[in-house]
Structure formats: structure tokens, C-alpha cells
Amino acid sequence: MLDVAFGVRDQWGAPPGVTHCCDMMTSNVDLECHRCSDRYECTDNLVTFIARWQEYGLIIHDGGTSYVTIDFCPWCGARLPESQSDRWFDELEELGIDASDVDNIPEDYLTDRWLSRSDPVSG
Image 1 (cartoon, helix red, strand yellow):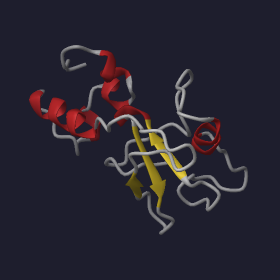
Image 2 (cartoon, helix red, strand yellow):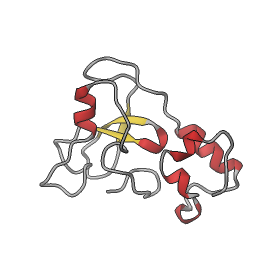
Image 3 (cartoon, helix red, strand yellow):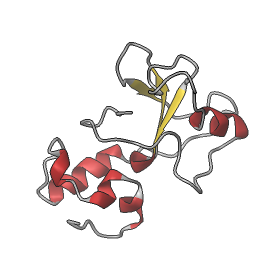
Image 4 (spheres, helix red, strand yellow):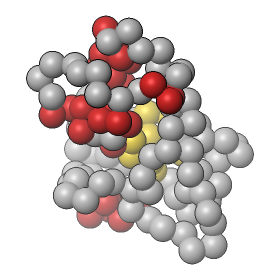
């Protein structure tokens, strides 16, 4: 499945060890439909979680991979983590990497591993 970020593949649901605000969020983020090959096509999937950006969104079922970011959990009302997408793009720019050039994005920046670094690295 592809997400909206320049065709970079994201995991289905959250990486192992990621906890969400409540059981309902977890079950929705981790929902796997056995009828559909793409979470964005499946109307049973309501929420997406982009681990590399720590970003939650409500899926727009329009045939693409669009979603609307959300700041609060629709089930428990908890404030969700601030999206790190701006920081992700800023760090890639600082490294001199064009984010649309997927082949040149360092591997750590394709997952959430880049978030644990104190300084941007080129790979």
C-alpha cells in the first residue's frame, strides 16, 4: 500500500511496540481487511497512522491515499502527538535531499527511526 508521501511505502498499522491512546484507536489503526489489498481502498479502515511522521488521519475513501490529519482521538478524545511531517521535510532539506526523490531518502527517514536521532544524518 502506498501513502501520500511520494509513493513511499508505509507499514500496515503501527510498527511493533507503538501504543496508541486507547484500545479503539489501536484496533482501528491495526485493522487488516482480508478482502482488500490496500487499506485506503477498504471502507472498513477509518484511521491511518503514518509512523515516520507520528501522524494520525481519517481516511478519505476517494480512490486515492488521501487522509485528513486529526489532533484528537475520535473515540476517547485524547490529544494525539503533534505531527512531525514539517520537521521531516525540514531535515531532508537541511541534508540537501529532495523529498520527492524517494531513491535518495536515507533509510531511517522512511520509517520512524529518524525521530530518535538528535542530529539529522545522511544515511
